[in-house]
Image (cartoon, rainbow, N blue to C red; front, top):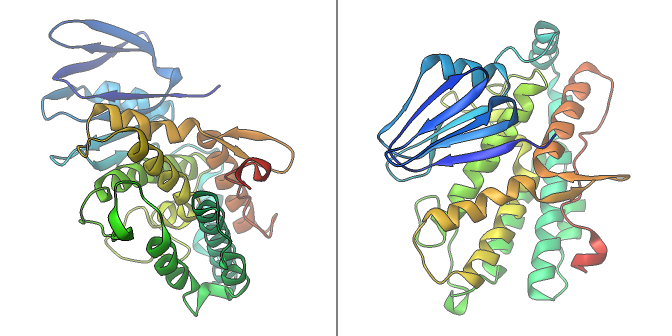
Length: 304
């Protein structure tokens, strides 16, 4: 069953009773089965949520995301005991060899660069050399082809409302960077939830290693999926002239979680696909697989 994503932006009380989430505002009260919730996003300084409710959400593998004053996701609560062989999975992940992690990172960056090239070709209607760049990625991406591709990608990305392609991708940059940041934060949370659901420890990354980063593995695995956010921001800019990150824009960006992606013999929503990718990574750590199972982000006959 496809889980629901709830966004609460008003002063509210969030409690639970009989496995139901109770949301009370000043004007109404609503309920929803907790087992149906994949993500609960709280974006208001005066939201009260009870500890028992948080525990029930986490026990049902729901991700609880807290937004800061800038309305961007600022914290994430997840289940840390979501797999029946948790200790064995942790051990495999901790003991993963350096060559294995370098190969997994190579696979990840190859997929990211290919996806960037496909989206850029679709939006510009012009051929590019991203397939060639992807073919040059070495084990561990020691020559930083990811950075080379990113520089070309954002230079050529044809964002609407941007004169002379003057956009710079910066974390704290001008519009529409805040749209991209919100979308990436949602993608990060969804990736972290999927990895946790497969018993993996988000703190131990393949490539990202900062001691301050509690979600290094999510930051690794989300890389090939980033163009989904870029595509959505492009679509939003074409249809919404406003530059404020308002409720409408947030709702549009949350749709990436249910967007269809494609495996070899099936298609599935992104939220489900991330679970398949996470499960395949767990199997790579255990020695049962050699490659991470990344989906195709587009049906190639549609994007050509």
